[in-house]
Image 1 (tube, rainbow, N blue to C red):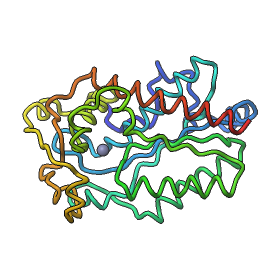
Image 2 (cartoon, rainbow, N blue to C red):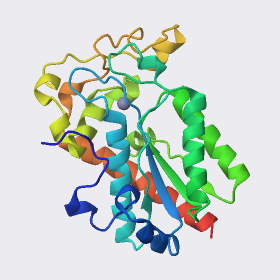
Image 3 (cartoon, protein in one colour):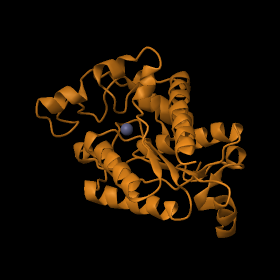
Length: 267
Ligand SMILES: [Zn+2]
């Protein structure tokens, strides 16, 4: 089993998708003549407990992007899938071994340069599928969105990936603000790359019902200080494929709506 993550789509489901890193320059030029939408997955490389890979956030970001691209293609709308950003602003998990963090300035410069380069080649309708939700990371992406939209004739959507909870009855993890490495993220990785999930370990983990936001309010600088001593919050043992599908469906709806709205706005 190869464990390098989903930087490339599996052939069976990826055949019709326009994955930039798999395309030739000639194929790209042909696509650029008829397509102006692109999706950039963004994640982080950070600790998510003893049962999930450090790639959790970007695995989910890539899977969401690919599923959204498939859903759009089914409606006749083509999109370009950009290679993911694999690092994020993760100071709050920096004391979990293996976390690799970059600064806000580095993230902003990287995302901005990548998207500006794509905009210059005609892709003016952009969507970021971000699955690292630390406020300082998310705030940086919103800042980049505003700057790019001010400087270019382009639209950059950053759908709020907490919203999906929200289409129906929020799960206990969302109600309690205990979202890191729990059932939500374990279920999502399970549906994207099951070979990366140590489900046997997940099933033995005791739930951690502590609010990350409340911990921050009381001065916790890291998730560990906020109560995630073993690298996770919520209830990883409760993860199911059904929960993963439910949340992918909800996130894909957000991305599809954002891409369509962007197409209308940049027409
Ligand atoms: Zn995460």
